[in-house]
Length: 98
Image 1 (cartoon, rainbow, N blue to C red):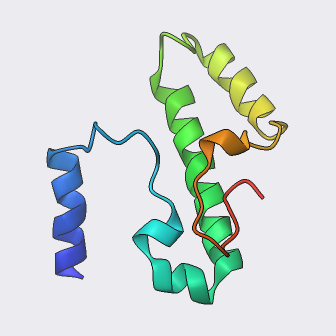
Image 2 (cartoon, rainbow, N blue to C red):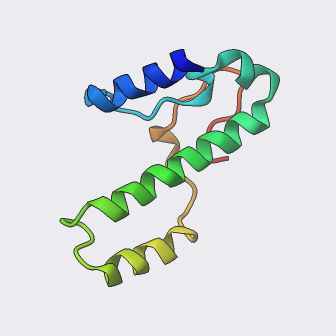
């Protein structure tokens, strides 16, 4: 566990700002994703939802007031399925958003 915590703290000290996509479970834990594809897809979906809420909460240029944040947060549950062009997958594993 100390190794995992140190790795995580490395991200806090040096955020990977060059990343263009959120890492998905098959990339970060391929064996887990192979053995438990539904759980991996659930994790990826929750990870994306969390990332969306982070944007709502910390982007005053997009959501300048608490009213705007609340309205957007309330609508988030009704979002359409993600655009498949923005998803990545490993052959044979379900993609996030499904």
